[in-house]
Image 1 (tube, rainbow, N blue to C red):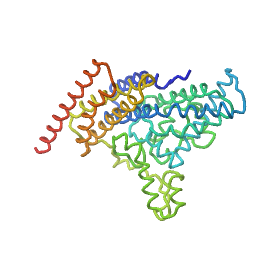
Image 2 (cartoon, helix red, strand yellow; image 1 turned 90 degrees about the horizontal axis):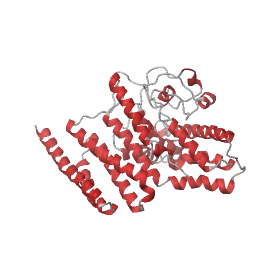
Image 3 (cartoon, rainbow, N blue to C red; image 1 turned 90 degrees about the vertical axis):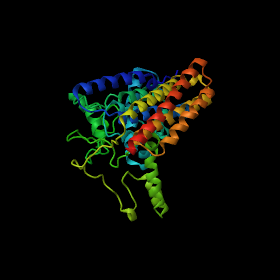
Image 4 (cartoon, rainbow, N blue to C red; image 1 turned 45 degrees about the vertical axis):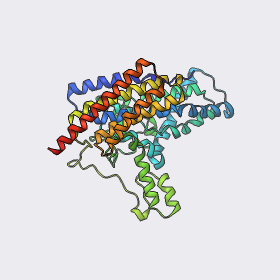
Length: 405
């Protein structure tokens, strides 16, 4: 039976985030910002929802090769489980490394690196499109003959392992630093400091980085994020912005070969007529500023409530989609993603937000009818959306008066 271990672990993720958040407030570390955390979690929710429409297809791609083209018949012994664990971790290393060295792959993976903070919510900041290609790197395991369910189980646990290493609360693990991927090693991986870029690609075992020459020890302070900051809380734009950069660069390149190279070369590569390769700049510590636009404090409560609604809707879909009609799943996922986009636009103070938010709230009433929920749920959901319409109207009214004064 195929079990989604990652989805089942979501409640545990939030418990651990709560513990780290409480520790952060107790120690006054300032590891968390509300806008950044909502952005990170929005990416995670979006990744799980878009993944619903890909998981079956990608799993059966591996399964098809195993059933028709496998070379060996692997027994399900303890040693085979251990061998497969090593194999999954090895191919994860190469998938991850190539995602940093090929622009077309980096365009998807970049989402995970956009946050300028480093805490457990960053672990959930995942690309909506990375799953479309990551599975290809593991196909040698199917050809060799490793069972698809065994592969799915160990690849899930490889992903789950990487959750806890997204923290600044744990400094060093002693001798384990030589074997395992640890918070210290992964902090380096998320750094935008030139010496830290494209280092420590490990999933579970840091030995691959040590062996293949991509290891870097954590030394000076890590500055998190990407070299050209996203400067947006919009989850949709976060997944598309680098593609936009690549396409614009390709259009400015008259040679067909350069157009292709734009997508195949490493990040920072440009044709000679556009200046050639651009190396990552050194961190200007004196002028370094995180993206943190100001907005009215009243807005915070509204955004938080809308995010909780999106989180609840996304969770219901994630745990019930196998029992729901296809149209209901698509409609519910679209509503959730639009709500997350609205939260980001509110925090960004975008000019197009007002029309978008009113449209989203009004269309949600149509969604209530389409989902065919029990009458009680319809009344509750409709009431919440009506309150949101009135609340948002008053917010914009207060904002207009504030700007006039």
